[in-house]
Length: 101
Image 1: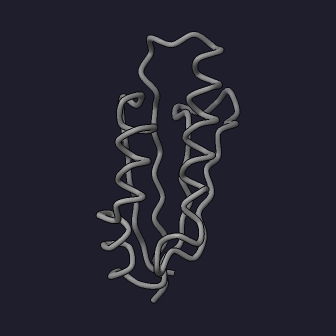
Image 2: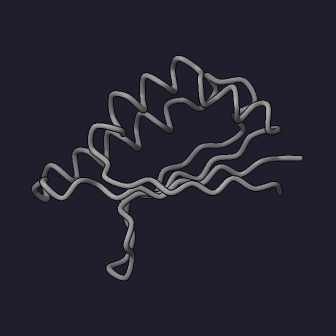
């Protein structure tokens, strides 16, 4: 069964509006840049423009061929590099929901 991997992040609250825009842009470009580089990753999209009613700053919406592909993505060097460089240092909270579709 195909797997959806959805993450919501909030950024640390120490950044200016300009810094927030740069951080969001970098996260989006680099995560979406993984498309085609990781076996079993079917689709990857980052939403950065939530409405004012939102209580998260970014959403990752990704699809994988199966659970094994998701597990491989988690430890794939390209993904780990993006996470360690562009995501983890700037985010305060992370919520994840993985489910079959």
